[in-house]
Length: 321
Image (cartoon, rainbow, N blue to C red; front, side, top):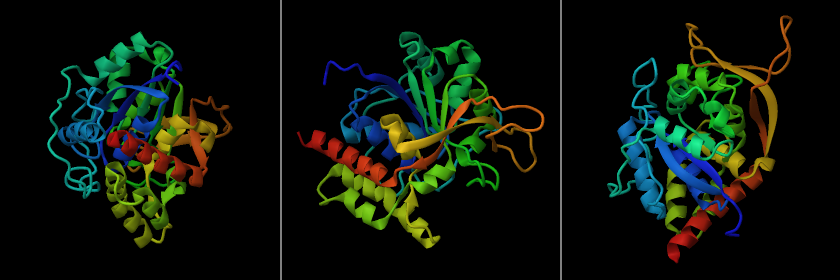
């Protein structure tokens, strides 16, 4: 398999319980050359997100992957985080040691641009946090969008939001950056809240993920998800949602996800709707839409769970050798 060319990818994230699982899935796949990780202020402040990225790389034995300095605040609205939704440190109940490896001196937007020039029309970006790093990169380097093969994000909502009535958290955290990215004419794929609710993890799934209890990554993954599953059950759902892992699933096997072509823009000025992803599926009386995004609308949940379990087992097998 070594003669198969790997896909160059940058993971832009704000770890984050579900970011951690997303990272595990990407690291387990043999398809990708993970060029680097670019943390951003989001689920927690940037310092926590950077340290969590470093911790997770050490945990999985992938200290060769560099982590770059990301944005420590949104482009126009200061520091916006998810508070303690992901626990005190961002990894819920999971406590990992202080990382020995360090963040690189280069800024995320500079690294993204350099990799796009090195891998023109091949570089893919998986962005599962606020889009500040990408927004800055697109502003600083106007030619950058033409060099990128695709940007796959977790973010947005066609209907109700999860942070405000209108907005999903990642877009709300930096609506100005999101607007720049959606209007940059770069191939976009969006996994919004609706498909994430379809990709729930049930109590039985949680047991299958943990397995026999001997795998380091399996145990960490199950620990990261337990609180989410309990929260979902308490609200009458069938389990907990794992948003960022859905975006990783699209990267690994897009056949598991049904998409529709839509036109997306972001509200940055509404009194009640800042951060809303405005999604048009058809023409209005004024004009016919110009699709700029593939939006996930369906997922093979059983195959999604199988992929997650397989990814965790793969990482644990690597660690045991």
